[in-house]
Length: 504
Image 1: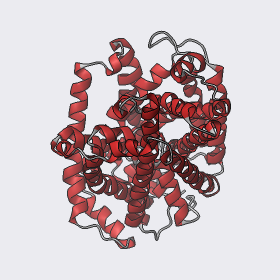
Image 2: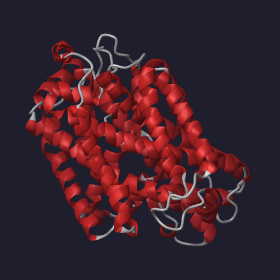
Image 3: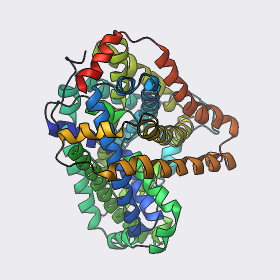
């Protein structure tokens, strides 16, 4: 299996895929508001610190594990230590959960690309989104029926994603990213340039960049910076381990990590400029201060942006379409990488063909995703997203660094592997960050999260609803990790050990 493992065609192909995975919906709709709420320009200090002490060190770690052990996340962790194969499956299960609802958000963006032509949302984008488009149920927990306006584009999203993945790493993922990422950057640049020429844009940028230095002393701001870097870079999803396992033997891992980290942050900054220029324009049009129009997530993308597009002086439909096409592209490049993690895991564990792994893994995710295309879909999506990120991704990242740095004490081995093929040598900073800074901050984040969620129900949802749509989803991902570890590998242990020898 190892000898025939697929490979990226070019180094640029790998970097574009890694950047494509990192650049997702969160860059556009999460980062600008997080930065604004945590000190504006002053936030860039903890943000940059978090990128250099957690983001890039973790990217180097995952690139090195994938490259050295030449396998999907479960196989790579099994080769690192058979006892920790479950960690790889846990991360794969997290990606699986995310793929089921992420595809639905891309389907919304796809629908809104068409709604933009004639500004179908009218004067009340909020009412249109929740009422006419999502046909949202009265209360959380009600499933209702399938909403055809969401279901039809959802089918299209899955056909595109699984079609690309069936073609493989080089002809599928790499080829798609070579088209999607440049297109995304060019289209988004057009939007940003247009937003900067709007009345009130400078007031928006002033609000975004104006530093509030008093926030630097607030630990919450630092936790927000680490959280943003962490969720934004596709760390602890099994993605970067999987992608780097397709790299050729001689490849500059550390350099690739720096390029990926800074490219992702560069796009976040661009998104912040575009979003706040547009919000400044909206605030001026409505005669209100900017803090009254700042929002994040679904509300920003599907309610506030349509409001802004309504106010545009010219070519409203065109800029609306461009914005939602950008969201669709950013979503698709991330969804491909998320689904690839369980395709690779299933292929390695059960020794099946790529096509079969895509149809079984991707097909199962596609079927489950229909739940989020029902009347109650938004509530389920909101709860699953919050819990799998807070108690899935963040916790898996914490466990990953503790296991590799402290339990298995593998940092020196991984460091020498990365150093042997990279131009930039990993100094003591790398080990200090991974063994000290990252686990302390992620541990603090987890502790605060658990306290917050025990005190107050997320979004005020009923406890019974959160138990099965949130907590059960996050805990279920860990259980699945152990279940899959207990299943037999369809390749001999001799081959498994070969992996260790061959790549040492």
